[in-house]
Every structure is written in C-alpha cells, then in structure tokens.
Image (cartoon, rainbow over all chains, first blue to last red; front, side, top):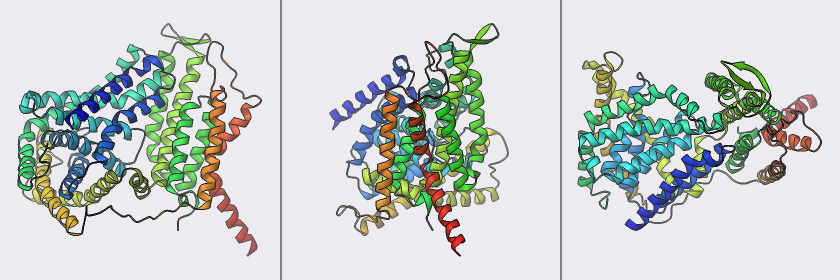
Length: 229
Length: 295
C-alpha cells in the first residue's frame, strides 16, 4: 500500500514536469498535448479511488465535504476571487489524508462546474484542486502542516500555483513559442487575482484552520471513520 | 418531448464533442476555422436562439481581442512585414496565426456552451457511471447536497442577520469572518446529517452486493448509424490532416489561403462533421413543413 502510493506520486511528478516543459518540445499542438498529459497524470489516482471499498459513512462524508467546498462560494459572492473552497480542501487533506483531500478537491471542481457550466477549464480545476488536497494530505504529519506558519505558507503558495496552472494552457496557446517576456506580461495581468486568492487562503487558514481541524478530528474519532489514514 | 440532437444517446453526443474539440485544435486553417465558427454559431442559435451564448459573448470577445492584438507583438516568425509598431516589425504570418488561435479558442468556448445545454448533468453522470461507478455515486450524492446546503446557508444567514451580523456591509475582513462563521456552523450541521444519511443508506442495503442501476438510455439503430458516420468522417479528416491538408503552412513560404483540389473534400467532410446537429434539426424542420403542407 505504502509502496504503491509512493510509486503513484513519483509517476505523477514526472508527468507534471513533462507537462510544464512540453512547450519546449512541441509548442504547435500544446493545447492537445497538455490535455493528454494532464489526464494521464491524474488518472492513476482516480482509478485508485474507484477500486477502493469505502463504508457508506466515509462515502457520504466525502460527498458532503465536496458539496461544502463547492457551496462555500455562496456567502462570499460579494467579494471577488475570495472563496474558501481551497481552504476546505486543504483542511480535508490534513485531517482525512491525501486520498480524501484529492477526492474532495476533484469533487468540488466537478460539482461547482455542473452548476456553473463546464468549459475547457474543468479538467484544469479538477487537477489543481485535487493536487492541492493530495499534497496537503501527504504533508499532514510533517512540520509544515503541524504548525500555523507552515500551513499559511502552503496556502499562500498554493493560491498562486492554482492561478498559474489555470493560465498555462491559455498562455502557451497564444504565444506558440516559448518567450519569457510574453509569459511575464500575461501572468502580471492575473497577479492581483492570484494574490487575492493566496491572501484569502492565508486569512482563512489563520483564523479558521484550528476549529475546522478540531471539528473534523472529533468526527473522525467519534464515528471511527478513515481510521487507517 | 426530447427531440432533435438531444434525443441521441449520450455516448454519441460525447463522441461528437470530443471529435469537434480535437478537430478545432488540429485544423489550423483560417477557412476551416471560420466555417466551424459559423456552424457552431448556428447550432447555438437553433438550440436556444443564442441566449446562453450571449451570456458568454463578453468573455469570448475579450479573449479574442486580447489574442489578436498580442500574438503579432510576440510572434516574430515570418518574413512579410506589414508595418512597424514601436520599432517592432508586425508580420503577416503572425497576424494570421493570431486570428487562427483566437478562432480556435472562440470555437471551443462556443461549443462548450452547447455542451452544457445538450449534455445535461444526468446524461453526463450516466456516462460517468459506466466507467467509474464509485465516482458517479459520489458526484450524485454531492450534487444532491448542494441545494440542501444552499437552503441551510440562507436560513442561517437570515437568522444571523437578525442578530446583527452583516454579509454585505463592513470591511472585507469583517465580511469574510462573518461568512466563515456561517460555514463553520454549516460544517458541524452537515457532518451530523451526513452520518444519518449514510446509516440510512446502509440500512437499505448499500454495499451488500454489486449496485444495480436504472438505465435510461439505449443505443438505437440511429445512434449506431450516427456513431458510424461520425467516426468515418473523422478518420477521413485525420488522414487528410496527416497529409497536411487543412493546416495552413506559415513557413518557410506562406501558403495561399484559398483551398485547392482535394482540400475541398476535407473541407466538406469537416463541415459535415460539425454541422451534423444542424442536419438533424433541419431534417425535423422539413418534416414539420411537410406535415403542414399535407394538411
């Protein structure tokens, strides 16, 4: 089990590196190419979850956390690009482990897009949010996730990375050739939105990660679910 | 009454969308792309008189202008200089490239608008459940919780507002904090509810044996026929693409935009592939007119 997990992670890291460096190899069909690599890199995790036997309690708990992550945009609709979806996913990853973090991240992307409308961005959101949850879960026993400063740093970095991955396909499609000037120009246009996302992550983690983790931990113990993670 | 393009099996529809999106990415030729854009626009109009497309038009328009303006500035391939912009040569090749990329993206976004109308969540989940049953069940459960949670959030918000908390006024810090307080209440409440829902599922026999499912869709002969012709025309198109038809040569020498010889065959096949939903709808219009005429 542990070995297969490590294998999966190594594999998907390799694919991620290929994904980012692919424009150097083939800029002409990058859009199609990147989509393929993206799918290959997260399909192993999708299949791994699909093959697992979950109790009904675990299943419903994941479903409701995904729904909470998707719905949590509602009370914040008056604030642009501030939404606790990423926060909910990180907290789930920390408490319930890497796989649950991944599942809730992917689920939040699918569900919110089923209501808001699918688009070429759906697979990218699934990938980004899924990976955010996965990494948060992997680090849950390390220093980074154990203390507040580490969690805030993670939330901040992830806020920017999320925006950058979402920009990636568009940027490469536009410039066709690898050109740092163009990339910097485009990314600076989205800078304020990414910053708002990163700062709101830090804000939510700083104020609410302790009570949320406590609530979820309590649940985990009370009903004895996700015992092995 | 389900009719026209929406009466086809979800799998056929999915294949159609996958083929179109791949085609839009591979066929980098102005005429092929403009033809595609026109047909996708018509498709949108037939479905709902273009109402949904209008909602997206601002975003699509922004993207197109952005790409058409920026591509020539950063792309310096080619040798036909149109004019100089801040001492930078603007190439004809780059301008054409910009137009092609913009129409590819506009086409993909516009076809997704029809995707959302045609492939409704139930059809999408049906497709999902064939390959990944556990994910489909999870998504379905989650979707069912969304309206419930929204109702609860609204209830809690109005109760808290009566008690003096505000979500629309005050500093960003204050609003975000109040919003999060609601989320916390929602979390505890929803988690308790989820355990109840899960126990009720177990009581009804969840996990005892392989889950059966209700099958609302069946492949009919017209679905097989359509699937065959879609696959057939896309194989022709792929063959043409591999031989370099339907892709505008930008370098070393700029190719003429006009089509020639066998390229017309591929162009017609491409239009047929994209226009297939319009054909099915058109057939029904002819039927209707025929019945009217007979009366």
